[in-house]
Length: 288
Image 1 (cartoon, rainbow, N blue to C red):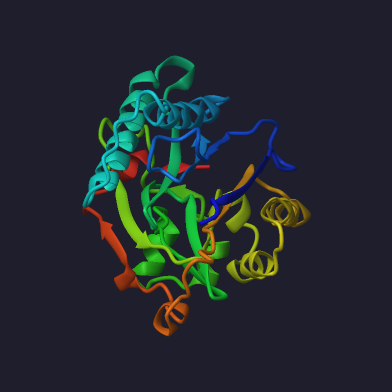
Image 2 (image 1 turned 90 degrees about the horizontal axis):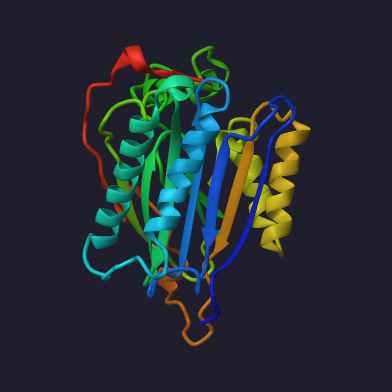
């Protein structure tokens, strides 16, 4: 089987004077044994350049924990989810402890994806999005932790209403707001040819899911389509920093997919999630 291929890009956008997004996109030999890809996007928030500090802390902790020499990862049921949850919790604790003085109140959203043994594992806090494109069908595998997203899930807002709502930038869960954080985790079984997308809201907050899907499904080069996604966000005003990572799960020419596999779409039942209900500290809601 050929290896996973990736494309990645980030841009400050047209309205901001510095980039508070941070990301990591690693493939072997820069990952521990058995890890086929490690991807993460963080979107910082806070006064002055505090958001940039927070997002970089999160990404650096991931890089350190997954350094080839330092990582001790043993594949097993749920283990990678536990590892990702632990890393995200560590990042939260570090950001929270460093939030003093000029960086007081800083925070970041974060989604980290690990691919190993045909499975995608993720840890997620905030509104970075992870999508999988399979057989021309787009599936979002993460839930936004935002005020409007929660209203949509509760049936009190439509997606169209949420897109233009005055509270659309209010984040209800982020790293750094509390000494502890609830981390969404999940597992998705990958099939040959699956394409994974991670994006900050500088992309999906500006470009519709359908437009994103059309660009992705018509690609013949991951880096090229990654650049086109960033360019599309900039062409639509570029109001925020924008970061995009694409990863193509390889096609295994040594075996032929069964008819059932070739027609399999990703449904809620195919995504194993662990989510804990918590009362949101509404007085600490992040607004960008």
